[in-house]
Length: 411
Ligand SMILES: [Zn+2]
Image (cartoon, rainbow, N blue to C red):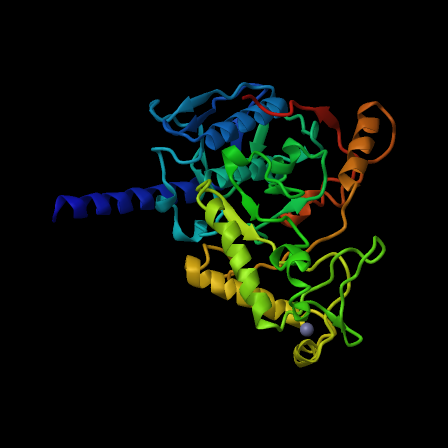
């Protein structure tokens, strides 16, 4: 047996031992604190990223608020101990050593792995590790991140939880809310967008929009540039290529999406946006928005109507074919799509729900509660809905106890 072979085998034996120990110990509650004191410490890698350091600080912050105990943060070059919560990649255990059924290839997926009295929070990327921490605090410990500066934190000086290893893979890649008051609660609720921006982008990366943020048809094929020479690029309505003017009708129309030159020009425009933006951040995904202008002047020319009829819709068939054509061409240039739940195409469907001002209402209600007013704060539209069904149900009733937490756990 070669030395290399022996090392691999040893790894497998170690893994089997870890799994067996975890299975035996899983029946016992995880006693994280007792009477406001803890034996636990939080471990991060010697070369932990800023995001992993932040994740450890956030965990320590909220565990302290829950239990009153101090959870120190150490690097993994400290000698292993029995009571450790390991955050991110450490020398104790790698993602590759996890049992296959507890691993996910989802970009933002993570695993909460119990190894006897130890707990590992391991994400595929640093942002995912941070989400794993928040998911543990929320789902397992009952912490609710309600607004930028108001959280619901249960008080439990003795904190014993029944916990078994699990994994989580968010199925929605871009989880954004159109609010301005979210602050850190955006990330704490495992969102990766706020309006068109990425909260904490430098540290965490995220789904980054390239080019104009939305309603991009006129940016793809500007009417001001092309209409005079090529009115056929634009919507035909009642037999006329439409160029609306005036505030009431807007200043742009839609594109004639069955015109091949419209696709060609759109691709040239998009390539111009993508090139300089790529590789800014290794933890970014890049998103090009291909969406209609903000009006309903869709093309009624013969070929467009024929496509929509063929697709069985009044509108939208031409749009889907157009977007898919762009996605296919971009895939030719940039290779297969990155790991995700949607492997067949680089095309992503974005669903937009009207949630404007709901966070504001929650903020106002929570401040009233914090001031003693006897009103319930309903949180039925909290952003956690996009994360998963386990996050929300316990938020609204009974009315939670609101506490004020620091906006962040440190620099
Ligand atoms: Zn048309």
